[in-house]
Length: 312
Ligand SMILES: NC(=O)c1ccc[n+]([C@@H]2O[C@H](COP(=O)([O-])OP(=O)(O)OC[C@H]3O[C@@H](n4cnc5c(N)ncnc54)[C@H](OP(=O)(O)O)[C@@H]3O)[C@@H](O)[C@H]2O)c1
Image (cartoon, rainbow, N blue to C red):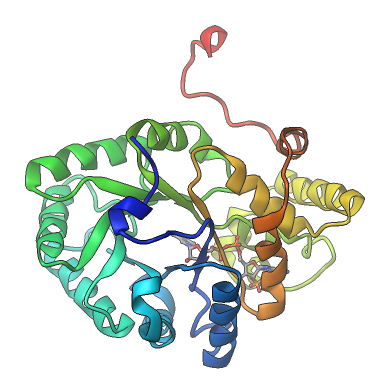
């Protein structure tokens, strides 16, 4: 089974997606329009939003920008902002997302997180109804573990929801958990994978070693997520490799995440246009196997999902 989303969507799909989590936040409407335009000029047609982002501003701004060329772009959104939400809340969120995005359907609709065992059937029943109504084409799940994906896949089939066709896990040089179960599963099951935070929220740009401010100094969740000293050491190591090659560390970080055979597209992002260029440069960067391995060796590989290490 292929991981390619294009046949399921009936339109071409770019090699990278752009995430609009900063639209209406750090990027005002003017900055968001510049980011959108630059992505389109670089050939990107996939835009990743969520009901939860910036109180709805992200979807609203994206909807305004994409409306004139709706059929050319792949609009992605997410519902279910918190574990425990009922099916009716999810259906209301999806309806509001369509209104904000100025469209009658999104191409991919993700469950943003695991609904909880008790509510899984109720949530998938709502996703089945939304699919019958044409609200979305491909069902995705984000922040699920592999067993949760496969459990949801089985329940989706039983409840008349479509097959899960897209995953959205965190994945970057210092967050490699997805390599253990999710990415091999996605290859085996023919599920597209859009990985988020390819720059580790900005850590892998090297700017924090230089004392700069940004998400990791301003947002406690991100500061804690990327707190371990070994992650900062890896970012410095990546910067040193990049300096030796005369490229931006962000270019290497994005190209590295995109290189895994299970990754369909990294979701790049930026708060300003000038931040975007190094990530876009990864589209044309020639990552050799030797360089990939040199970068991978900056961090410990995640342990395999078995204790029979002699067979792994
Ligand atoms: N499904 C989920 O739960 C989930 C979670 C997170 C993200 N996402 C999606 O994935 C997208 C990307 O995630 P992400 O924003 O975490 O990606 P990321 O690429 O790891 O981080 C992007 C951030 O890094 C900083 N940055 C980027 N380029 C830079 C440069 N050249 N120099 C210095 N700083 C730079 C900026 O933050 P500062 O300016 O603040 O430093 C920018 O907002 C989001 O927009 C969203 O669509 C999904």
